[in-house]
Length: 249
Image 1 (cartoon, rainbow, N blue to C red):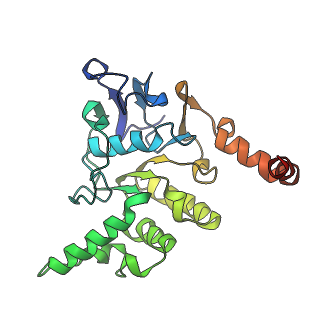
Image 2 (cartoon, helix red, strand yellow; image 1 turned 180 degrees about the vertical axis):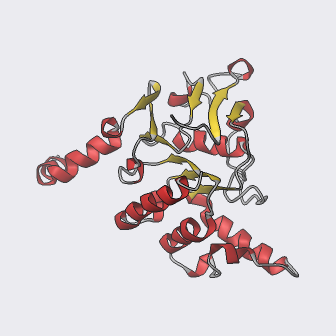
């Protein structure tokens, strides 16, 4: 029996939508979107570019109280307001109890989070510096991958809701595998992950719920049936012939 915790589901207020012809409601995967049920441990959003993964996961994060550019719920900054209005049309259903920790990682704006941390620590007159929670070393003084890894290893503390948009963006395949191990540690500490990803490695956590966003809408699927897995598997097992086809054409 799976014990319910964290986010249970997200639903679209369909009767409130101004027009299905307008962005973001005209995104292919959102045309027939009604409700998504979350796994209490790990839920993935997969799919091709332009299908709406980042738009949907960003809206879920904002509807949960996170800053659109990322960070914990205590972050309140805006470098450039680029998020959609989708969060205003979502209803989030939660299980009883409140997570002690939480973070929204938006890979494309993590630089802005790192900058805001430095700004807040510089302005603070007393107290423990925020960067202490990330290992004590400036995130700007590390590589993109190292700063992501510091977030996973130092900042994430368990009993949390972690919403991640393309976390593989800065991680090598080896680090992506290590990320699965770290996720498992945190899941065992009552954490829940919702992840948008292209990576068949990141998406390999066992017994997770996987949704694939396509031109025809959102469908629940299995790991080996996702396009990202099938294409990666096909390429790695037959790369010479595929390269010949790709390059000759």
